[in-house]
Image 1: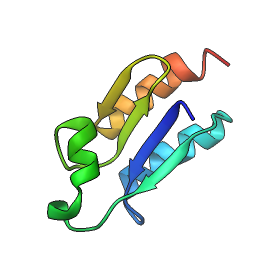
Image 2: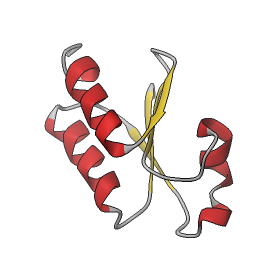
Image 3: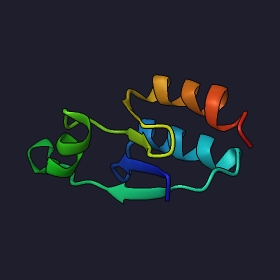
Image 4: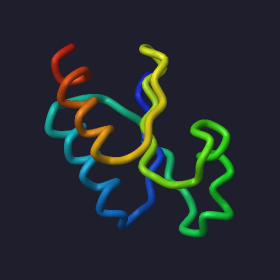
Length: 82
């Protein structure tokens, strides 16, 4: 899968990203992370930090964090490529 989302269950910022991807019919895979920041090693490996959400678009070589940035990317890049 070329789109992967690192997310925390119950995180409102992660839910907003999930909703945007679903609303645009974009296929993606979710990697659920632990609630404790200290246990988010996978997120740190891919993004350099432990906060979520983190979106990875392998096809375009993009890794990004911050929900507002991700939502903009979905609207301006992923949704327009469909």
